[in-house]
Amino acid sequence: MSTDIDWADAAHRAGEQDALGPWVREFLCSPGSDNAELADLLMGRMASWHGPVPLPIDLLGRLAGPRDAPVLVAVEDHEWRDDVEDLERRLAEGWQPAPVIVTFRDGGFALEDGNHRVEGLRRAGRRETWAVVGFEDEADRELFEVRHGSGATGAGA
Image (tube, rainbow, N blue to C red; front, top):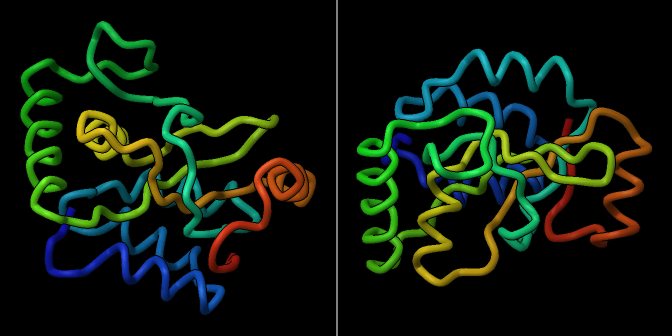
């Protein structure tokens, strides 16, 4: 992730301005994330965005992680360990990570971007993370609001 931009602050401002879709695209295409393919996929699938909102990290289904974890994409142990240890150290120094990007489908959360951040937070003893939540349709958004409340700062497509 690029350190030139305070992505946490930018996400909160984008939420207040109903501009989370552009924030998600910019964040995913930024140096460090370098994931324009995911940005394109999510921009094509998500009808709306909400947040940032605090979510319990135990609710987030991780898509990537170490080989011995229940994940869809296994990351090489040395890459996973080094990245997570660096994040854990930075958190201890007071760093505020960018919100993770999740999608809400069929009543559950899929962690689309932020697997290393979530693990760093978990190891640092945190139970929640800020999240920007994407919805494919209004029914999922309504279900989210019934189960989790409307959350923090707003929505933006």
